[in-house]
Length: 132
Image 1 (cartoon, helix red, strand yellow):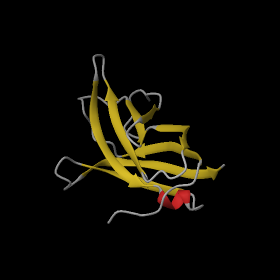
Image 2 (image 1 turned 135 degrees about the vertical axis):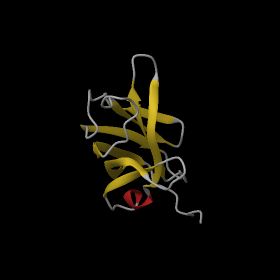
Image 3 (image 1 turned 45 degrees about the vertical axis):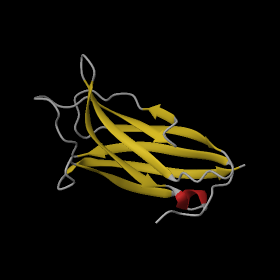
Image 4 (image 1 turned 45 degrees about the horizontal axis):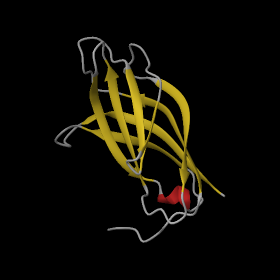
């Protein structure tokens, strides 16, 4: 069901806290980082954490929200940095409409496997909105 709620103008702060149980993409441990997308036009990225399947980032990003925005989804994409390129560990979208309504969100976002039958790990995300 599509939400008819439209966001007020303000700033959405998103903290990528940590991840757990990340799927191994290589023989060794991952060198994971996270890309955070809002409205598919705006992307921010954490630093990579070397040799960890349980990384901690504690990085906060801000997204300027224009009044009337009807996009309430954040897309979280976790990748494993390699010497050449990066392998996708997993990605998920989650709704941040509650943050726009004044309710901070503090949640673990599951990264479903390709067929959705298992998990490629979870990412701890905190989102809060500050209206103008």
